[in-house]
Length: 161
Image (cartoon, rainbow, N blue to C red; front, top):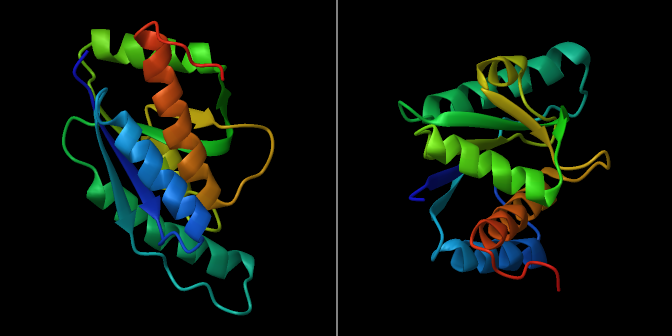
């Protein structure tokens, strides 16, 4: 199963332990899939954030995400309103997409305010990592860990430690 994965993430990772974890899982994913973390610029959040300003921030970041997509990529958006899957179901989804010939995946992880409605509308799949709320930085790490776990499941390797 040759698969390419790009994680399109808004804003730099500023927490050192999260950055170390991201790098660790990118390294662990190498034997399974070409995986790339693409950091997109975060829009400046004004000190007085009202609904209109929040929408403008998300819209600017959404344009960056949609502009970073490559032709033929299957866009998977991460949203609290997305479908929740078990690790086994996530692995099955990756296998199903690969079998359908959709082996180029782009996961969209929004900035501090989440994803723009345009990104959610463009996504072919919308997933939630949990009903719990995570920072956008932590969501990147959790996504990469779950991708690694999914590939271990797909390859019949132990995945519970």
